[in-house]
Length: 97
Image (spheres, rainbow, N blue to C red):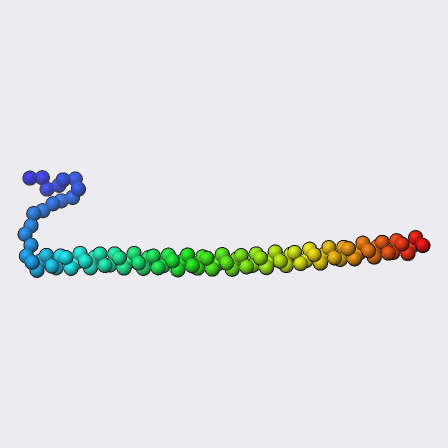
């Protein structure tokens, strides 16, 4: 009789009802523990994903604020340049008269 069939060892045993219930209980406990571990890992990963989303939102807010700040600075610079051009034109006009 070959005890090793390449997939594992197989044994023919006779178990009492109590032994079968104990084995079933241990198996159920193992399944529940595995399920609990899977759920805990899933929750941990979900929390990590939410944290990363919050970090991205915060970064996007900072980028948007910086973009708005720079747009306002550029607009203010354009207004100043326009004012400077007008004043130079007026100065040239006054000197030309």
